Amino acid sequence: MNLILALRRIAILGMGAASLTAFAAGAETFMNGQSIYGQPASAAQATRVIDLSTARLPNIDYGETVKFVNDRNQDFTWTFSGLDRRAVGLTAIAPTGFDAKQKSVYVGRSPANRR
Image 1 (cartoon, rainbow, N blue to C red):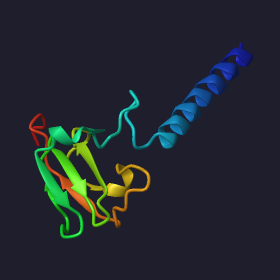
Image 2: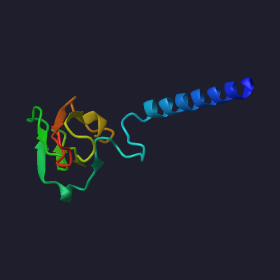
Image 3: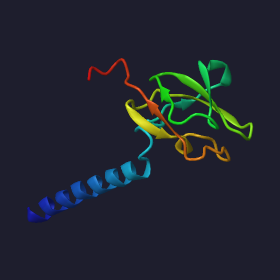
């Protein structure tokens, strides 16, 4: 009887440790695999363009699609539909090789949130 109880406890602890490890490994994604910041978009969907060579800390509306350009004529477009009310470092969402110069944007509140 005690052996069965001990095995159950070990199994429960093992599952808890595995889920924490999975969470730490994918800390910037939801459980469905999507980014907590939103998703890439096409340039045609952009509602505005932000030039990173002149912008400081741009404010982005939740759900807004923005095209970012830098002084190297590189660009990418992103829809901010993940978590709201937070600063997002562009290095977390920019494609590999894009020079974001440690810039960040601030994403506003989602209309779906009451607070």
